[in-house]
Each structure stands twice: as structure tokens, then as C-alpha cells.
Image 1 (cartoon, rainbow, N blue to C red):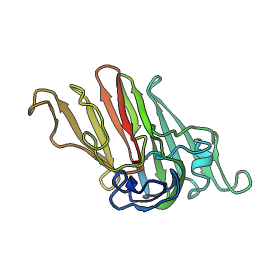
Image 2: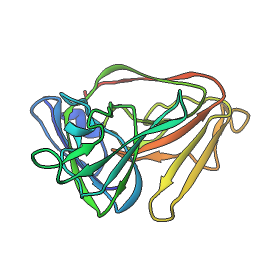
Image 3: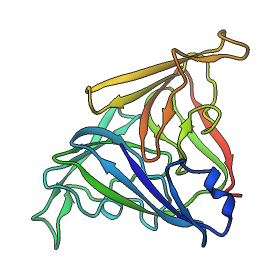
Length: 218
């Protein structure tokens, strides 16, 4: 999943806070991120806080027949909608365009063909917390930043935690588990996951935990 990021900020230092491939221009802390969604299944995330974080507003158009599936960790089920180009004025997600995709959440998308979606909104800053439950859930970075899940994105080293990244090309997963007995202070085995801007991933936890970090543009 490729991305192109335009972050409008008054602070020139933002260049170090987003993907190294991002294009950065300074004005203020709002902007857009172009996410290339491939054909077939992939996992997506909304990297910016929009005025309306529903799929109807965030993805106003998509190839007809494209599906979105959002997992509910409480019920273990999915809420789904399909993009119908004949619904509404210029196409709509049916039956529910109001499925939310807030920063920190994620969903599966099944694209009929590859397309690019533009996410528009505000870069979240300050103290950010993503509350995670025990068991499986889909999560994402709350800010448009790419890198190692630990040192860059601040995901905590939780003993026994698993991360599963979906691979669109193979239709399988790349997994890593945090082993608190490995290395000096614990390690991700077999390797530390690297997360892209606009990418969501599965997390499996033995107990509830918070993904807390402080993010400042400057």
C-alpha cells in the first residue's frame, strides 16, 4: 500500500515525523494523505482526523462493488458495506455509509480494482491513547507516520502480544510476537514490524492494554 503525504504545518520539523517518502509543505497542521489501495483485500487506516470520520465521508468514491469490513472486537463480527455507484447522487456505501474509521482504528477493504483514496484532516498531536482489549482487534497508528512499531510508533512491549500484517500479494500474514525474555528488555520475534502510513494491522493480546504515546510536530 503506497502513500503520498502532504502535511501543511507551521513547523518545519514535521519532516522528521512522517514517512521519509512524504512531501512536506509548511502552513498548519492539516493536510492530506493519498493512499493507493490495491486490487483485492488489504488493511487500511485513516491517518488523519477528519471533520467526519465515516466511510461515506472518508472514501466518497470507490470502484463499484468494493467492500469494506470493520471488525468488532466485542462481538467478534464484522460490519460491512459495499460501494454502489447507482445509489445516491454519485454512489454510496450500502447499507451503512456511517461506519466509522477513526485514527487508531482499521478495516479490511476489498478493491475490485486498484484506486487511490485521499484522506483529508488534522494531524493529531499531544498525548494519544489507543485502548486495546484482550484478544484480537484491528488497530493503526493515530498519526501519519511510518516506521518501526516500537521505537518510531511507540507500540508497547507487551509480553505475549502478537502483530499480524496482511500481505495483499500473497493473501497471507506476516506475524511477530513480543518476547519479554529475549534480548535486554524484550524483543519482537522474528523481527520488528514496520508499519506504513494508512496501514492497519491485527493485534492479539492476553489482557487489555493501552497504546500510549506523545506526538508533537515540532
